[in-house]
Length: 246
Ligand SMILES: [Zn+2]
Image (cartoon, rainbow, N blue to C red):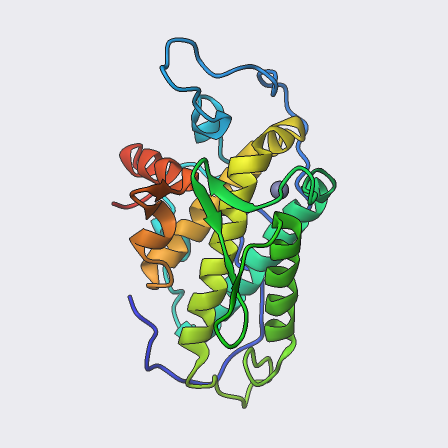
């Protein structure tokens, strides 16, 4: 479904995340987060692709139903509230692991063994930034957008700007990069917090929503053939398992 070209009055913003979407804490007895990847694989497999971590989720089954546009809901508003929710939740997760993401540990915005995202400044100039700086730029720029009533209107008589679809696509791509960096560089911390079911559910929901409303391209998720994103493999795995649509 595409929301491009639609432009109607918004409704009050509410959080659509079924899990409640609050702090990433979870008390549960599970496997040791520090256990090493399963033996026998040739290349060391990242933990986020290993059982049981890869398939741990709060939401069981397919994500298709929770991304569908609810009846009587404006599609632009639906996209806006979901993006706001993804941003808020991801920001909380990053806040929890941020002390382990420093210029020293993460000198590049890595999203895979060979993939480093480059920040594009306004005007097109590109810069390789340390991950914490890059993520700070992402989160600050999104906060500024959601605070801007002209871009994310909250009043009932306002309409969305015609550039809203293009803006949210950029936002979505940047949020994906933050997910990709956390999975690639900080999954041990997510496991240490026992937050992998919550984090996986948030990311699967994010992917399902992004594909449903054409906010993400396959290339964004998988990276380039010579520089694949680690999360591309996770996406493939979840499609095979029926968690996400192919
Ligand atoms: Zn980092």
